[in-house]
Image (cartoon, rainbow, N blue to C red; front, side, top):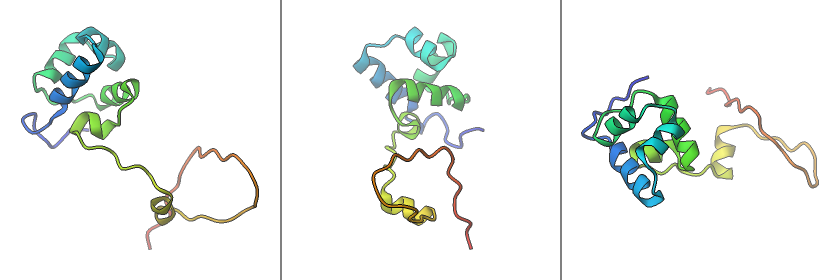
Amino acid sequence: MTLKNDAATLPFGKILSRLMKERQLTIQAIANLAGVNKSVVHGWMTGTTPHDLHAIGKLSRALGIGFRELLLGEPEAPLTLSSFDIQFDKEDIFEGLCEVKIRRIIPRSQE
């Protein structure tokens, strides 16, 4: 998967540099978190378009920041109950106190 934005319009390098400064992280620390070489991180910081989106995902999880926010500077909208209801069928099955774990979500078919 490649990104359509070119490096000149992708704010990733600036976002990454800001996070590194705020959190006092080195290039080596970021490389370790993302599972890439230091030269790759240096390239990201100087404007190279990241091609390894798996590494960016790994880095975003390690930093506790959303993928889109790290890569594009666009905060991800939280999933609200109303937006969840719109996308998926829901059905009352029982009443009472319970704990629900969702392991897989299958979107409702578009008719």
